[in-house]
Amino acid sequence: MTGYLVQSFIYLFAAIIFVPLAKRLGLGSVLGYLIAGVVIGPITGLVGQETNTIQHFAEFGVVMMLFLVGLELEPRMLWDMRNKLIGLGGLQLGLTTAIITAGATFLGLSWSISLAIGLIFSLSSTAIVLQTFNEKGLSRTEGGKNAFSVLLFQDIAVIPMLALIPMLALPELIDAATALASSSEQHPQLSLVAGLPSWAYGIAILATISALVVGGHYLSRPLFRYVASSGLHEIFTATALTLVIGIAALMSLVGLSPALGTFLAGVVLANSEFRHELEANIEPFKGLLLGLFFITVGAGLDFSLLADNFLFIVGIALSVMLIKTAVLWLLAILFKIGNSNRWLLALSLAQAGEFGFVLLSYTTQQHVIPAELAHLLSPVVALSMFLTPALFIFYEKVVLPRYQSDSNQHQADDIDELGSVIVAGAGRFGQIVNRLLTSNDIKTVMLDQQVRQIDIMRRIETKSYYGDATNPQLLHTAGIEQADLFVACIDDRERTTELVHFLKRSYPKLKVLARAFDRGHGYELRNAGADVVVSETYHSALYLGEHALRQLGFHPFRAHQKKSRFLSTEARHKQALYELWRDNTDDAKFSASFSKLFMQLEESISNEMKQDRYSVKSNKERSWSPPPKGYEKGDEEEL
Image (tube, rainbow, N blue to C red):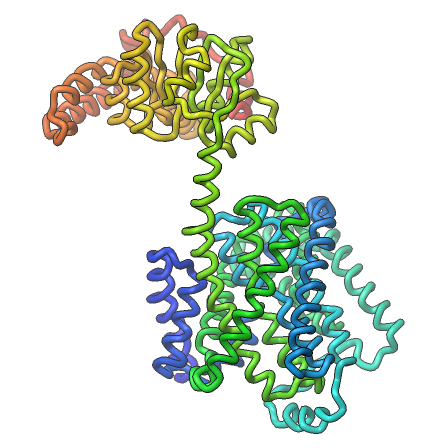
């Protein structure tokens, strides 16, 4: 008992120290876990032989991860992915296996051993790639979606691999492998399909998957409703864990991949009203188990073996990663995946995966690969996983900036239609302004320097042009001399201020409306000459504040009244605050005197809020009409 507690403390303490440190250095949590494992394993020797046993347990984090991935996918979405899933995933696995098999055969290995090695190294690490995608926000990119299709196909392909590998057994290895299996601590595994003929095995597989789909669809909801009605959160967590563990166990009993089974269960439950509750309950267990898995990979590195066979292990690891990168790169061209997404697909899947450990053990048990060779190939899998975070850093620091730079150096579009209003910036703020204007039949010229943003606008059939709105020549082409208004919504506060300066200096009669990021930026824009300055969050925050008052029991009229008084009080003090800010030195724009004046404003607002709705001041607001019947519910829906 004491030994387990000490080891648990060491694993958790190492994660607490190294993972936040790696995140702070921009290396990602996966590399932090791997480093933690190396420190407590090969370097300090705080953990030892129990690492392999813990790793088998921690692999259940992958099973949970695929369950959560399935929850995010609906069956229709999965069907839409079928071309990439089978085409891209199938070609990646087939080509990689063929090339590695040919290479191993060329090095003198038998074709059966070479094929087994090719199958093992063709798989990538679902755990590392999906975890990194989530952390770096790459899951929704084109490269991320294609990488997910390949990973999903690989996870499915493990099933036929498990069926194929026993057929590759070498007679001369049977005696040695049998002796090794008998000397290991592994226990015979339970199976519901052992000894069944092939036709019966096929029926058992179909029956299991059918039971999973039908049971998940019709039985899960009544079960979750029954558990939820108890009001005991811990029982709901136990139910979620029971569901995942039970499905994984059922899949193992019939010889299928537990990860595939839980993925299917997740897809079946994707439309369930309990989906988010399931995610919230499973997520912490998944995160901890995946982290534990990465630590065991780092702790399992055998430095003495690595030192004795350094050139062989490093050479094989780099060769495998190079082959997989080249194959994925060519497939990305074939499937017309362009720009940085091509690099993301090729680099993210270059490593061997966690199933590599499983298959290496399985091939040894099935008399396919000699134990000595499997012992040498295991560090190759671990090393390639260890190098993966470096590939993501290379993608972020080298590849991505290059493509972003290229896209921003795109030649400006030819503007073929002028309007009375020029909107600079097609981001979330500029889009709303433009929609309001164009819906009132006002012609606009929308400019943005981000190609991706222009592509999005054109995809929704909104006319917009690529170009730098601070370029005088482009403004001339856009008809700045004939424009009535200029709306500045650029996502760069310094450039926005400089643009307003330039416009008011060059076109003094032009009305300039500008979006401010905060109070200080608003003063800068006003100082630069902007006719109207609106803080991007001010009015939406007031609107939300009014609804917060209503939710707290305030009558809609009274909540609206409070908001109006807040607004009018701020407006009365607005000029004084601005003049004080303007008169202060550049080093002390928000000085003590400004703070004092601001505190007076807060006091004035507080006094105004204490005024009763039937006071003398409220008589000025009598023109306001009471809300119609059912206003409260209807207004909520507008939000």
